[in-house]
Structure formats: C-alpha cells, structure tokens
Image (cartoon, rainbow, N blue to C red; front, side):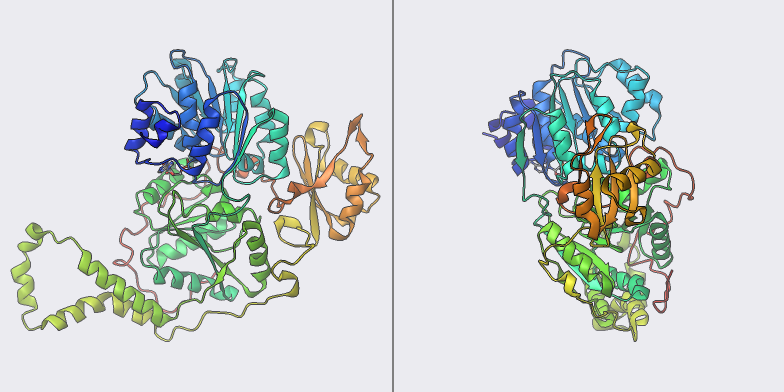
Length: 593
Ligand code: AMP
C-alpha cells in the first residue's frame, strides 16, 4: 500500500503527489498528516523550510474541506508573495484529480481586481500575504464566516516582518471555533504568544532539533581582509565551476553592486532586492529557477520564501544583521533531502559572530582556506575536461563541418588537439591567476568568543553587543510614541534615557535596547507596573530561542507585500548563459567598492 494512503490520504490525491515524485512522506508529513486529518485540534509544527510542510498541511486540508460548497473554508497566511504563489500552486497540483477545487492566491504587488474576480467566482482555499488580505477584507469583498481552518505558515517570518497586527485583524474575521495550524522554523517568545492566544491545547510537533539547522548543510567560513572579500568570493566561485548558488548581502546597495561587478567580470549573476519592481523580480527568479542564472545575489527580505531545489551553495557575502537570519539563509540549500554548503566570508574580527551562530544552529563551522590561484586553475581545467568528455555530440549538425575541421587540424597530433582545446579556458584562468596572492587572513579568536562561553547577553541584532534587547507588551495601539515609550521606561526602571538604545515601536508591543549592565534592573523595574489598569510585562526579547535582533523592519521595506518598486533598470537579460564560455577579460583582482 502506498505510504500516503496508509496515512489516510485518498487515492486521487495520492496519485497526484506520486506524479510529483513524492514516494514516501517526509518526517513532518508522516507525523502531522494523521494528527491534522482528525480536524479536531489546533496544531503547532516547528519545522524548517524545505521539510515538506506544504503537503503536511495541504493534504489534510484537501480531505477535510467540502468542495461541493463554493465558500472560503481554509485560509493560509504566509509572509511573502513567492511563498504564497508556491503554496497555491502546490495545492492546485495536489488537488488536480478532485473536482471543483478553487484555490486563490492573494498577495501584494499584483493587480487586486484579478484577485477580487477570482474570489467572487467562488473559492474554498485562500492563500494570502497579510497586507493584501486585510485590504480585501477592508473592501468587504470576502466572507470568512465559513472558515474552518487557518494555517499560519512561517509564523516567525510573519512576525519578523511586522505582520502581527494584520494577523490579529484578519483572524478576528474568522469564526471562533475554527482550528488554527501554525508552522514556524523558530519558536521565539512572540510566536509562543500567538500559539497561546489563538489556540487551545494544540498538538505540538518538532521536526529536527529545535532551532537546529538542517543536518545536510555543511557550514564553512573563510577569513579574509575586508578589501579582499570580493576577490576571495570570486575565487570560491571559480573553484566550484558547477555552483548554483544564492549570495546574501546585507543591503540593497551591496546586492546591486556585487551583482553588477560580477556581471561585468563575466559571471552569470543577477540581483534580487526590494528596489526592483515585482516584474523585474519575477524575471530574475524565473531565470534562476530555470538555471539560466548561476548566482542569485539577494537581500534577506527579497530571498524569503524562495523555494528552488538543488541550490548547491549559500554564500554569506556579509553575515546577516540578525543572527537567526543565518538559519533562514542557509535553509535555501539542502532542500528536499539534498546536501548543500553554507559559506560565510568573514573578516578576522567577525569570528565571534561565527561562534554565536554555531551556538544557535547547534552545529560547528569548518574553517576553510581560500583556494590558491593554482588550485582554481587545476579545478577549472578538469571541469573543462569533464565537460568536453560529457558533451552531447550532434552528429547531424557537426557532421557537415567535420571535413573542414579535420583539414584545419591536419598537422596536429591527437595530443596537440587536446592541448589546444584544453588551453582555451586554462589560459584565461592561468592568465588571471598568475601571481595571485594568498587571500587567507588570520582570524582573531577573542576570549569572549570561545565556544560555549556562558552568560553572554545577546544584544543588538542578536549578536553579542553592549545592548540587551527587551520586549514590552505596549505599543502604538496604546498611543505611545517612541518618546513616550522612552519616558515610560525611564520612569518605571529609574534609569537615564542615555542607557536606552533603539526603540522599535510596534502595534501591540515594542522592542527596545538597554545597556547590558542595567538589563536586570529594567526587567525588575516593571515587576509591579501597570498601564491604564493593565499589567505591564517586560521580558528578554524572544527569550532567546536564537537571539533577538532588530525584528522591526518597516512595512515599506518588506519584500512580500510591498508592491511595486521603482528604481533600477531591468537588467534581466544582461546575465551570461554560459558561465565559463563568455568570461570577459579581467586582469588582476582589482574590483573593489
Ligand atoms: P516545502 O517544505 O513544502 O516547501 O517542500 C520542499 C520541497 O520538497 C518541495 O519542492 C516539495 O515539492 C518537496 N517535497 C515535499 N514533500 C515531498 C515528498 N514526500 N517527497 C519528495 N519531495 C517532497
């Protein structure tokens, strides 16, 4: 019997997933499907991306909904447009053998009238990003009174992106008795709070170790001088001729600059960031998915929800601002049981950050050496040799030219011919890497970055710093401005405003930073505090399932729902199809910014 049938999935759905190549359920599917199929309890699933979550909740939904009725019965909320489309497409594929299934994807940055039209026609499953969903609810264009299941996918990401209030508002339009299924890669205190507020006695499931990265990912770091970073990065790429990678940068500007430098240097690369229009981003993603792009240079926000299989390398050109973003970045490789490498390019002083990431992901990095110029030449030469050996020869087409080609090489021995062909690429690399310097720099292993150091405070951005990030259950809905909040904290904790760092004011809560030395004082200062008769809670932000971090990106900068962006020109045709064949002249590793 098919293992999916054994889990209780009907035949027509089993047939559809078999066609997709699903032979055996993934661990989360194996455990979640029977629990969700009962349809009688709330659910919390702690699982990384790429574990097969979509089918874990999608297949039970297809069993539980009544498709003879054309009204919204399931609502799936997710953080980004890409994920939204992916989930909707997956559900359509899973349900292709069931009659009258209507799934609509509702997301920002696309024409709302098309989405409204689809809703009017009648849908049972709505997959949505929160911003656009709220817009549609505001237009009274959808009736959620018949919703029986709500899925919150990548809940931690949705909160990171500031969707808490939107989610509250959306859920308030659904019936009390619905069941809520929550999936999250990490379980910071804010997600726990959602689980507590919206669920009764949920069935809890953890796949893999809490907060631990995928076991199939190898983590490596390279230590370089800041000025050598780009050259070192290119060397790593050159040393991996078959690389199909995502390169993460911290800012849109850095993303754009690196992509442009790479394109100029003849690499098959392009940028993905929030300053591109939705159309431009779609184009870049299409090319990457089809593998006509080899390197995708992306910001964290833009790369959220990217589900491309067979990514061989994730390269952290710069470490993320927030420690837990490292897990999200590296999770773009080693999907669906594959293996992958996550590389961090760091400067000597950043070794402490690597140690902190190791603690969060529960895995150690391997220190790797930037390959020498000679190593790269050798690697490229043999990649070329293997390519020549493996190439499909089109006998019909090449046949007509063969006599002339043979004629040209009449004077050459077989060895000469091979030497000449192999030298085409080899010379280019030899030329480029001649006298290439050693780019490895010495790392500084500070005392405080020793593995397993205890008592560290996670400060700003989740990395150790002078500040500790705290959470308070008051925010803009309580009519606080940042200034009010500063005063409120200072009064209650009896501290000076100078000891307070960044204040990240949200709807129903706020994150703020205080100097490490007074964190306990501030926590204690609010023990008896109340605000308008409500008790005030102050806690360590995230209660540190993986560090805090400045979660508060502004709504306008998030990738998922942000709509169209103006700005950069559409460069989507400027990449190079053939990575090795069209490399332009590039002498000396001089590219800097
Ligand atoms: P997800 O975590 O839902 O984004 O799934 C990650 C990838 O794994 C997607 O490409 C799915 O198509 C694939 N996948 C999900 N379940 C299975 C399965 N049981 N067997 C093989 N591939 C799967």
